[in-house]
Image (cartoon, rainbow, N blue to C red; front, side, top):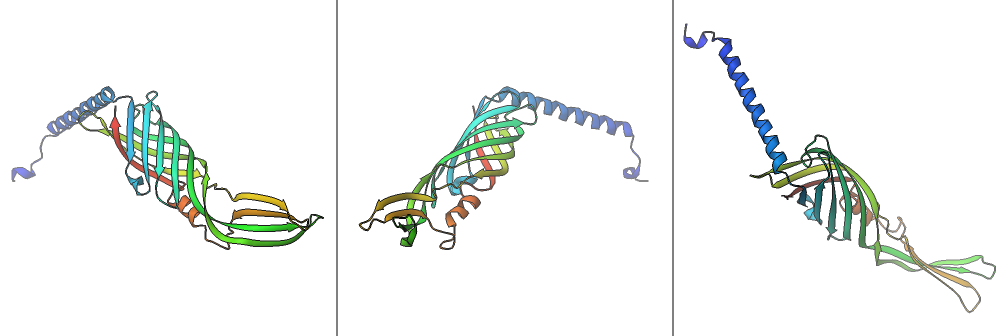
Length: 240
């Protein structure tokens, strides 16, 4: 019978397997030691997938083996909404080697934005008995720039890795959800005066109704823009 079909002794195979396992355990232990010894206290990262509509930079600092704090700043430059978003950040790493591994990240958000919305000017006329006698649109569907301050929060889960010769480079990806309100002013202004006939006139500038326009800006905000409900990110950075 050819030697290929002869049963070989089991002990050399077990011995070799044991040596391979020990080798990989030592390698993993050495990698963990090197990562702990080479990891610095701070990360700075730039998002790459957000560049379609904003420039996003994140700073992260280690608190302890499980937790980090940071700050994310984003500048949105794509119409119809332009502005800045600031997010204080806290991360909890599931294993005790922050800032690497799987983590959960809650954030608070505040911003300052500019957009253009459609407004109507409506005139209300009241007589001396304060009864409404006339209502008319005196300027329909004109566009006007508005500024607003949205607030919100988000929750993400992600993983962060260090790589490079001295583990000085950072790769970070995460996904999650956010609520970031599109709270532009619905009523822009209101003026009041008495006409020559003694009637009280109120002119109110307010946002156009849904019957007059499709809410395109709000749709963009919640699906693709700063308030996107689905909130994911991929970043590269430097550990220092």
